[in-house]
Length: 442
Image 1: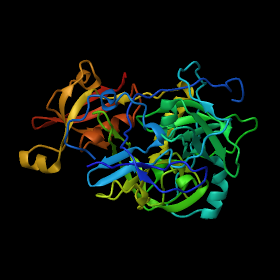
Image 2: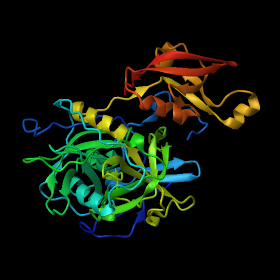
Image 3: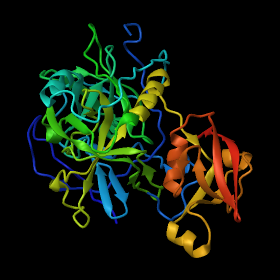
Image 4: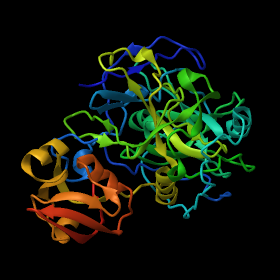
């Protein structure tokens, strides 16, 4: 079962228009598109189908979302979630926007993004106080000339450092990259568009970093600790739903560690949104890339996806149903730092294809639930660790492996070169081995 996304034809910035169905688009393709820094001198749940052997096999060769900023869609058993549209509201982009070109000609110094305080489990500040402090750090991202009718699209972003770096979703700007269209940014309560440079993007994690010039230090958000979140904790979302910039909504953390799957086109395998935070704060198309804040006003996630009611996938105008997803900031922070430093993100992989062994299947066969290896990459991490086809992986370090998605998640939560302990069952014997994660080569 799939979800048909929608987009909104542009009728000028800030206008609300009716949605119409459009073809389904999936996240796919290698990451690492990066651009030179013109300011370099300044201040600077598991399906039973076999999982792909590597992220490169999981990804297609596309550049992410399709033309026109059409949304990406998520498929996840009965729950069907679609990634928020980058380009739901139009309006052409003015002369200050810059067209995207290809090629990484510079390497930025390594930037270390700060870590805030643990998220409180009860309200600490009023929503009004959180909004007042956070709104100046939230921007509206305009992608021009992306639609079939020449319209642009709108998404959101958050300033993560005072020298102009902005974190957003890859699908917000993917259509501009694919079509050579301009990207610009509008700051809170400002009408002028600011030329934006694409620093780097990573379709596999749906994250991207932009930069705008900062003659004077810009207000920057504090990046909190998503690992400290608990179910029920209060959260605030800010963004530009349906092009309405500076919109504030509230809710709670509904669940943690969700791994919804993003179906891809052209026969490629799906991408998993890693360890997503599920929220009931209302988010809609245009909120993509905007911050999810804790009760201290710290960024704990990047809003990325909403759910669609099963059976109503074509009715994208249904909007928010109180099931949204955000990329955890602990994960987004490390990706952003890599993108700023090198223009690309690295991805550890395990070098194996696997199939989910469900609890029911394990009970029926006398086995154990987990991820059963069906093939190994020659000289890959699992092969080097002595694992064999037929082994059932049950744990990687402290992470329980219940299926193929968990296997992928456990790898991506580590870094290339990390050594991890793999617990597996061979026959009816449980054993452990050490595995060194390698970088996926596209």
